[in-house]
Image (cartoon, rainbow, N blue to C red; front, side):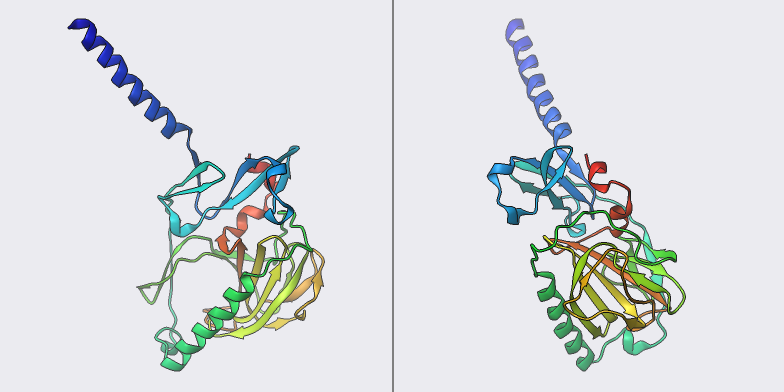
Length: 265
């Protein structure tokens, strides 16, 4: 009997150790970031948007803010998206028409959302993203990515962009090479510009006072695209900068670091 008990003990302990080891060895990532999964280049075609880091190839997986506490899978890799407290942002808008929308304005926002969503589904292979952005405007960061947003103390959608406050008329520059695929004047965003950086990487710029580019323009990194303003629903002049990867909004600040891709490993 003693022998059986000892064997059962080590058997059960072995199971617990195996489960614990698996949990500890799972890939874990932060919401709003890109997660590199190493792949065999020969198993993917060029449209997959692979990146090369230290002579190995990786597929970058965007970790959605909305999937915190969940697992996502890619190519037999399982990635757990941790929950993260990004803090909160509270703003006051005195113009009630911009907070409690009329039926006409609500219909307008739905139409405009569809226009932007369609543009985000664009897939350019003419430009290869370097994932090495420069800061698009000089100013003070007034609201970071991921903050829970409250407008007039009422909870709203999280702030999945980077707000940079700057004086009206401050120049805004393309953070990397790209192509202008959408320009518009929208209810929430005001004067709006969307840049395609290639292979699913895009960036948008909202609340501009003026736009210096046209749809279809091919941009060089550092080229002026417009100026800071306060158009749309705002409380003051600033740039609302959003970065998308494969239609998932990721943290713009992350791409500003030197050798960003190498920092992922």
